[in-house]
Length: 119
Image (tube, rainbow, N blue to C red):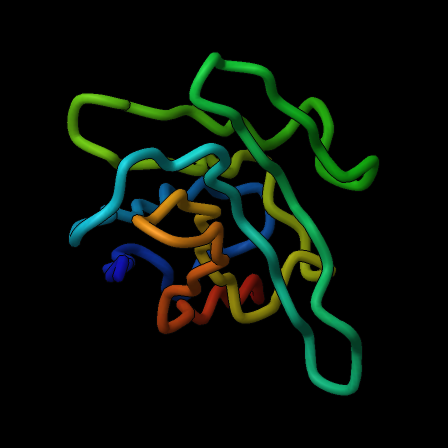
């Protein structure tokens, strides 16, 4: 089992910055991928950014050049640095991890963090 504890989030004005963190703990052999998804009211959850244990990254087109995902494998922690925030970025942000356990691979989710970008 994997537990994901998120921190960060909050209210910022347009153009501001925010940093999200997500720490994984529990019993697992390997976490292949960690990433961030977001879900705005009335919309489907969408991928924001992901990163593999080897450091390969991918981003949603809407956040390229503004958001940066990073990972500390020793701490099993993933970060999302969000810059030049826009009102359209307002959503609940969820941490995700795909982990190899003793018998299977499985996705785990954090509790979610509200990010609100408003004047």
